[in-house]
Length: 56
Image 1: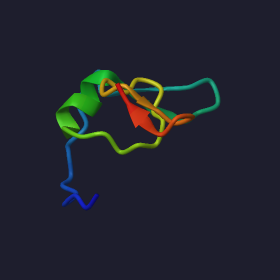
Image 2 (image 1 turned 90 degrees about the vertical axis):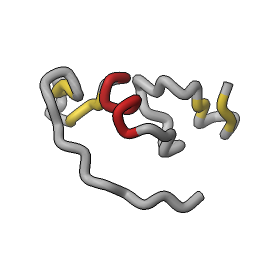
Image 3 (image 1 turned 135 degrees about the vertical axis):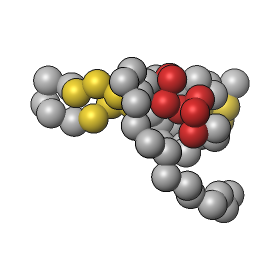
Image 4 (image 1 turned 90 degrees about the horizontal axis):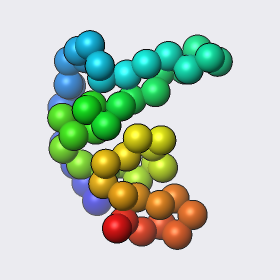
């Protein structure tokens, strides 16, 4: 899949920092982005399963 990537300004609630210091994007951010990147994101609202490489 080829998507034109546009810059989405970050707002409060779009991510949080994990204890290790990584940025973890929330469901709110993923819905704003509008598509699944198929990376197995922790809060994916699109139902992607990295183990089976499929969406619900």
